[in-house]
Image 1: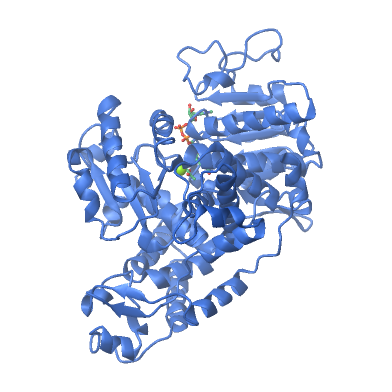
Image 2: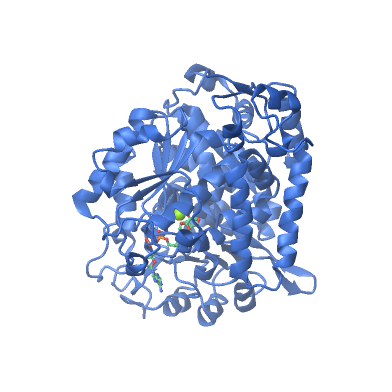
Length: 614
Ligand SMILES: NC(=O)C1=CN([C@@H]2O[C@H](COP(=O)(O)OP(=O)(O)OC[C@H]3O[C@@H](n4cnc5c(N)ncnc54)[C@H](O)[C@@H]3O)[C@@H](O)[C@H]2O)C=CC1
Ligand SMILES: CC(=O)C(=O)O
Ligand SMILES: [Mg+2]
């Protein structure tokens, strides 16, 4: 399995433009059926799912009762697209002297207004310009949006279930207008990126994640649902804020909390038995507990624990390859990880599994190569009240341990003594990989010391890309959770910045699970996703410090990941099929056919003909 990673290369160079053109032809030649709309007249123009603004053709204006409700000139989709991009560019020009915060929020607002008005055009500009727009609709700007959500709020998006709705959720779920929902992203707002408890304001995260589902996985925007489960907040500033839009009460805890989540999950699966629920940005204790509670019962996963783990593992394997070492050497890599939360522990769980598999496959010595730190420093068996999830990774305190390291040792002490190959941050604390720590990484036992500053948003990154290359050296391999620009190292050299973000996996996990029709998401399906991501990069790219694909090719990588997940579900005999494609057909698809099948099922934004039906 691991050997396959080095051998496998990308099947064909991805040409997004070409695929878009093909899809355009495909839709315009009528392969996609017409869209049934139950509304007519002004109600269609006010519905972003169906609205085409000035692009409604005359025949449709007549058929749908729109004549006279729009200016007479009919614009093409391309003209509308160019018009939007022009206004976006002039906004950029006009705000060039403003602070980054003001510019980012202005960009988010202009995109959000389009989202509210015309989803087809919105998703098209998003897909075509994903590299430029992802940092606005996703991390880092989405963090700023959540922090300012109550001031920015104009109209609701998604659904809000609150502790006050207990007993009502089974009927409330029918308030959602779509007949079918495929993908739900759910948060309780308790740990939004590295920004802490943002209560109801955390709804921005499910919205941003689902935008990525549509852009990357081609999920149909009419079949997605962002959800906020508002069980109160422990953020006093929000409770005191007269503009706060959430429940003004402390967070529910214990059985009361679980009763609300249980009721929501039961309501969802009563109405949409085949939906997939992604848990996002839950505080650690509930992240692990809800995953344990629901993963066998429902088709769900926790992105922060499981999606992040797969992406990090792919990066860790890449960091081994970047040194020109065989993959089996992964088991010899010394890893220091700062952050023992849901993301950090999720990463360690899969890294440990991969270590053990390699140790077994290659008959290597099984040594403990992981050093875990949290806010109180190095985690050892001497730690009082250690979280159960962190306990398996606590270092011993015996003579076999590195001299001078003890319970609570600081990050710099650990890095100096361990000389790790990889330093990985999932702490949610900006700047903890400071000059001293990064300089200590210069003495790493690796020829290509790897720094993964994975915390989000940018202000919470453990270090910047510039500092990583400046203090660790040109040979460093660098990845961050939020995007940074590549670094000019002088002499024509460039320090490549990777984005180690779960966005490379969660869309494919959701899409693969959906198309397989599996009733739950197994470790095997998640492992297949991670392996496909790891094998995506060529040796040449990895040795040049490029561990992850460019976000511009996210539709392609998601297609491949989705196909890998689907095939794993088939192999585990869990696939029940989707739509007209049953389990037998899925079973008989070759690898290549599976990839084509997944690609074919991805939604692409074009204006299809609208047909009115009561
Ligand atoms: N790049 C990506 O794809 C992802 C990034 N993240 C980011 O990871 C961060 C953490 O997320 P969770 O694990 O869910 O949060 P969490 O709150 O569950 O855990 C944070 C952990 O960091 C530790 N910590 C705090 N200060 C520290 C310090 N000075 N040194 C070492 N450890 C310290 C805490 O003790 C805790 O164990 C967030 O910023 C989040 O945005 C999370 C998921 C995916
Ligand atoms: C990326 C992500 O899921 C997080 O920072 O929580
Ligand atoms: Mg998250």
